[in-house]
Image (spheres, one colour):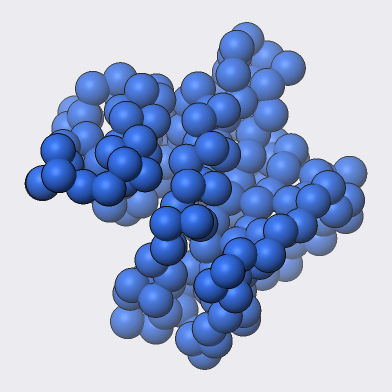
Length: 185
């Protein structure tokens, strides 16, 4: 069975966006970006909430891609080659290829998708990930903790959730970021 993986850059205090909704403080350097490229390369299908999808669709046709650094071109190719399921009550049609829209998150349908998938799945977006975590669908978490405290905003993990985890790996990056890789138990 394929795994469902939740990964994100966060501040030290556990936020993925600050109080103004900005995440510019989390822009990865080449080393961290390349790490995420390799992590995303194993994903066959990405599950997105609407807001994150609208941010990520940038990678379908980034301006100036042909002159961008190789690691940027590489990520665009990885993103374009991944199937996407977007959960939204407002979007009617996808704006990128290999994308389908679902009006609501159905844990049973995601379990079935995991059972028949040939490659791992990822989940992105705080609200959608919270639903998947609460439904017991998330198998692994990858957190890249950045050396910044933002003091508030969108938390990467929901309040009121209790999960026991097993640390599988950790890695320190040259920019002071630290990767933590956990399996749910």
